[in-house]
Length: 216
Ligand SMILES: Cc1cc2nc3c(=O)[nH]c(=O)nc-3n(C[C@H](O)[C@H](O)[C@H](O)COP(=O)(O)O)c2cc1C
Image (cartoon, rainbow, N blue to C red; front, side, top):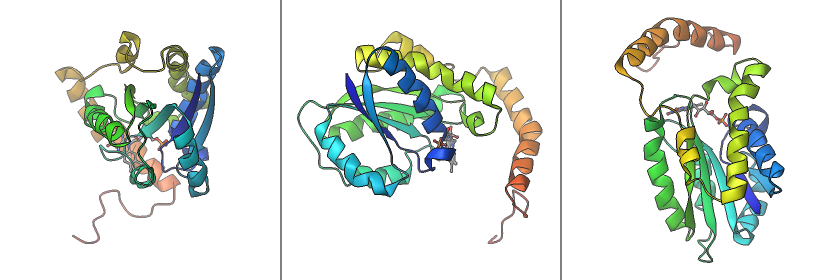
């Protein structure tokens, strides 16, 4: 199997969580003898080649970070430049986000089915998983642990060409947290996480408070 892989994140390769996820996913594919060519939507210089590759490839995988409950605008902008095809091409998706509950990504997943039809292709499923905020912030060992889980899914994709198996469905993890966990997460966000966000903002040179509303 050969797949065209597109990283749909607007973040440049060096800073993209999706990119680190794809490194591990592709390692799993390679173990099973599959080959791939990867492009980054964040690099507009690649768009002509990506369009050409979209026309030539029959197995396409688009990896997407959730941005404000949605597909990143830059990816949509690229997809709108494609000419729909009707040659049996299959598109599968990796849809990943920061928040952990699977339910959060379901609206995006539903949209991806419609999008595939609009591109004249066959839907090969979406690998849904959240809890990936940390990749950008945590130490290398933890990054390896979070992203490493995707290697097995790479093997699965190389073997099946889609994400329809029970194993892929289980990969999502919790669809929604039980009430006591939700309450706990709420407290953590108001205390520990808030402190963490403040520190990150300060480290990045932010001089105003996070709730600063200059236009109020
Ligand atoms: C502007 C912005 C909006 C985001 N919106 C969501 C969201 O609605 N839901 C979610 O689960 N994660 C959200 N995230 C988190 C990203 O999906 C997550 O960090 C992802 O791993 C980023 O991948 P990337 O670095 O390849 O772009 C958002 C991140 C940013 C920067």
